[in-house]
Length: 518
Image (cartoon, rainbow, N blue to C red; front, side):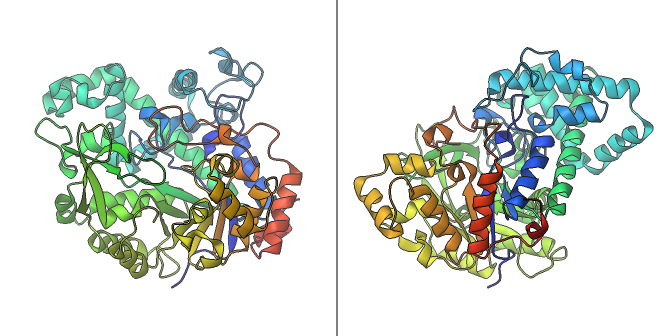
């Protein structure tokens, strides 16, 4: 079995968590500096969460589109550089400037979102008044090349704004059912909102493309993330209801989740509508192939979230209070993955697909067969190794073809985990690592780095040895997640130096970083 990755190390950090004086991390100068910091630390991998426009609970796993980019990540500083806004425009909203809004440890989404959208409206207004012919041509080309998803998405977002931001499930029936006459009548009044939305999408992809190019220059490969399910309140479900299991009223009769597990004793009730896999098969999985191609334009490889759902998924009756009562239903399995492999193969430099399988949870023989058949590396989480249930998560058992982590965005930070772990787990961890309470986090990172796993990744919170206050997500909790941010002084040269030494010691030093500034 081959891996697409050389022996390498990297950091898990979503762009929203980068430092910034504008209320949220973005794709601007601080992201470019982070790429350079990664290279100076000898790393070659940067893993991010899904980059789509977040909806319910600000979760990157509940996006308004699986194809669109998150407008909140657009950098005001790059808009100033490109002449689309002026420095004075940053003062349109209170605290929306480096001087007034000093960096904090968490994103205040409630205050941030209207400010960022107002700023994008200013940028669009200036584009209409004074854009160069080159920028106008770029915008026209972007709309033409992405029309297959962009048109529906921008119409969806304009209608959502017109109806107070509510879910499309609550819109008037003609709009809910995409009545042609109703939509044609509404379009003229929605034109400016549609155009502004499309312009923001061009800006996102423009800035992300620039950041990716910068990452490549420093030898950094980006690992993206593809959630298995689309959000109910999304342009995908609204625009293609035939692809999902919905009743006559457009509501899901069953929803997605997982049964009780390590993360949640009553299971995780995600609420996403389930796929109508027979229809996908009849269309030769065209929607999924478009989705995977789009994801791999944003990243060098992607983590395929909840991979076991392709073998079998947990369906729960709509309206259930928890995910405890449900059933396993068969997924598309090799039918879908054959189609994906065939579609992607022509663009690959090796036989393996650039996909990491999130193979956590209940892994049955049919899931293992898919992993082996398609040569997909799975994941190993060191925090799971000390519960006495499955020693596959202990580093001495890691295969080469896996991606090893101390924890992920769904785990507590390692310091937080150790503080709340049982006495047996703590003692097992200390004995296994020959460690002490104070050195535990550093020793867990070193154990992951020293393992046979081709790729070793640590959440930035663990590299900084932060506690539960820095946790990114509490699975099963609908609100209060996804907001942690780096402080302006966290990315020090001494921290990079320590990580570089670890990469050197464990044979993970990036080739490109050997000549990078230290």
